[in-house]
Length: 150
Image 1 (cartoon, one colour):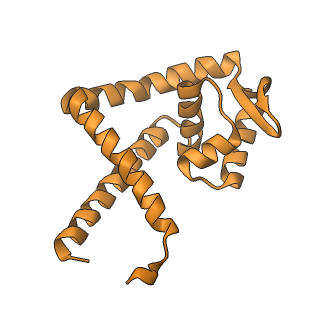
Image 2 (spheres, one colour):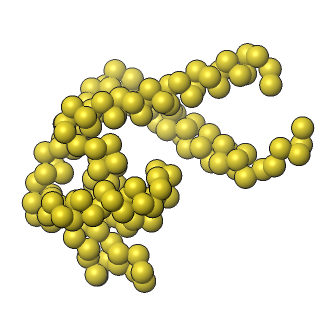
């Protein structure tokens, strides 16, 4: 690979890892695990979630997600919703206590994201999102390809 291109990939990877690290620091500062935050984030986005949805969205191991979900159920934050469930996949929703917990917690996260968005601007965020979604898809396709082409 050409040196200049490799250098760009190094910078992209560092930025991605640092961004994830910032979310991890936020989670730690708010006494919540990063993975629990992802479950709450997903429920906020879709209104409910399944274990498979979390695993697929964030490429997390099923065992990790199962552990987080079990803890959240034990804490009275999550319950299975038979009406939203399909087949073996149980849909998970927040309990009333979980809704209060999530709203308070994610409000703080939203404020951090809003401050960053204000500085970056809506247009740049839109372009960044489109590019990252495209890059993610292409990178996943490249992972599936063999190295026989070299």
